[in-house]
Amino acid sequence: MTADCAGAPMRLLAVFCHPRRDSFTGALLDHFLEGAREAGHEAELADLYREGFDPSFRLGDYAQFREEPMPQDVLCEQRRVDRADALAFVFPVWWWSFPAMLKGWIDRVWSEGWAYNFTAERSKGLLRDRPTILIGSAATRAATYRKYGYDAAMRVQIETGILGYCGIRTVSAHIFHDVDTDAAARRLHLLRARELGRAFPARPLASS
Image 1: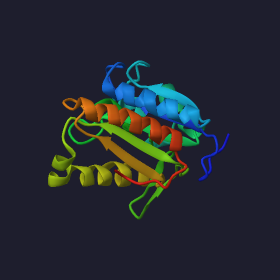
Image 2: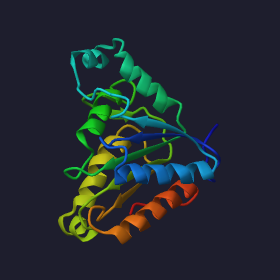
Image 3: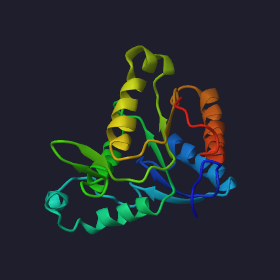
């Protein structure tokens, strides 16, 4: 199963990070995956909390810098990413970024020699570029994000500093605002999440 820009069926890895599966973030995930499956995509779910992923970077993780075998849980996650034609990250926005669990997944799994090569002269991303979508739930209003530049800061940090650095540049980011206080907005957000899944990645990718 392979991906193409026309929206052919793909193998999608959805990385979900929230301590509550029944949260609104979980509902966004469900609606997005419903849409993706309606479009014919095959979805695999990496539910970091329910699966008990350990996000703590420990001594064994330094193996990447010594060209030694990485811990088995890291290798398992890397195989998941390797077999995916597309990636989705679904998470709550905490402190204008990923939750610590998801950041720890990145810290451990996106390792030197697999996700990137670094030297003092230059860095090189090693991951195969593929359609990638970010779906974040936020309590704060969109106007507040624009006023203080939170949206721009997140794009630089996540889209450029993590994904782009490792070779993934076909990225669309969608932050769903006012999820704690606006019931009408939540209903529209769920419809939008399903639409994103159904269209993914057939339409031109754009941040919102």
